[in-house]
Amino acid sequence: MIPTMVRPPKGVIFGPLTNWGAEGSKALFEYDGEGGVKKVKQIVLEEISNWNIIARFTDLKGPERLTAAAQRTIARYEQATEEDGSWDEKIMSMERLGRAEEEIIRVIDEMTAERAIEILERSYLI
Image 1: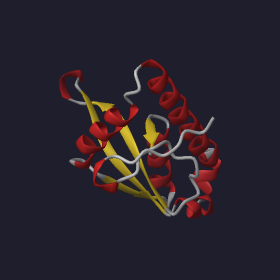
Image 2: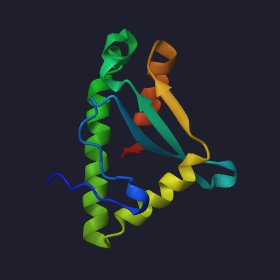
Image 3: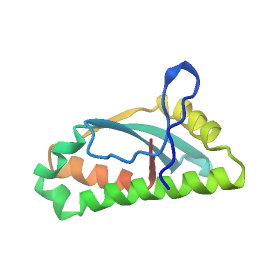
């Protein structure tokens, strides 16, 4: 089952990304900060539909990893809603925290392809 999109305050729509080929999408990247404190960075993925033209992205199985990230997000969404229905609050909170360290990813060469893959392996796509 693909979850429906949820409309939080201010008209921003959050929900698991199901169409990674869109021109731009957001990912919430969780990582360990200083002292083992979990931190969140918001990643803006630009021109995703053009990433396949970068050989390194394709070599690293980029399209498959995008799909896996979307599936992981949907699974986490379903788990959250079954357990306590708190997906919206969790994602809105993460998104707010993530804005402080926003990074824009546009895959244009080998280095950015590798960075995108690293992020996709540990992020939620919204």
